[in-house]
Image (tube, rainbow, N blue to C red; front, side):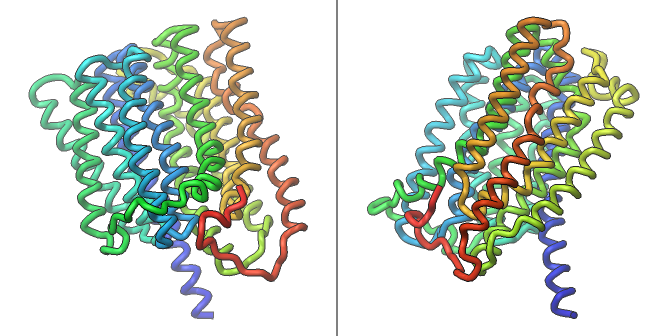
Length: 427
């Protein structure tokens, strides 16, 4: 009994650390967006939002390719480790170029600001890689400390800039760079030598890693890419002010979305360990987690809708208005995430990333299609945009469950698995 209690305590501690990390990270993002909403004006906040959306897309693709690969695969296998090194270098180079180009293309930043954003992307991705190693080691307490240090340094630097005048986009980006650099230094100081050892790049099994990571990156990147395209569509087809109001409403759902993301960050390594220990694919725990998470998310969304009017002046500083119906739309979107997340994490852990990608692609096409139709025919109804973005989430979770039932029936319940080589991955 004491052993079971100890395991339960360990699980709760790890889950708490994972959620705490997401809370701190989301709090930092929320505070930065609040500063932007209040100090940069509606158009400035819209531009900052587009930069953050770009950063999220690039980071998500990097995390799915590099981070999930080092979590799910055997990162100490020489050929896999070499492939991860190649992937990391490629991701940093592509991220820097993409960040700089998109910052200019969106009109969010130009000149020094665009270059600074490109540098932020690089530092941010290095920090994300370090954090994924900590998560793979199940060191969620250290992960939470890392996120806290990042936030503290970023806002200390931003406060220093603020003493010389009102915040500008460039000073906010510089502060974010400083926070990420502090996070990298902290993680490097914590991780053991074997985790930091740089592999030789010869003999890298890039094809083997890609057989897993391609589908994982594709399915993980669909939602943030959909959100980024939705923001671009709102800004282009309606106005920057409309985008600012839509994003202001989303800020009220930040605690709920943080909870969902924290649960996801915790579930994937736990489910991978269950698979490695020889446990067969089991849907019941994932379904139970889905029901619980959905209920909590729905309650949080209802609270956000009720609090929309009282909190609007604090969020916007009078620069724009927030409609409760838009908050309700983001609440519905959060529920669609909660319904699907535990099941999709289970599918990913048991190497069915291609299935998750197919389902997410259907979900994204439905959401973007609905949004574009709405904006084209009735741009005055842009406040309903979040409902369109989240359309299809519940349906796709049902598809995932039905498909996983079939796959579970085909799997052998008694053969333990461990992914020791990327070539073993069946995307």
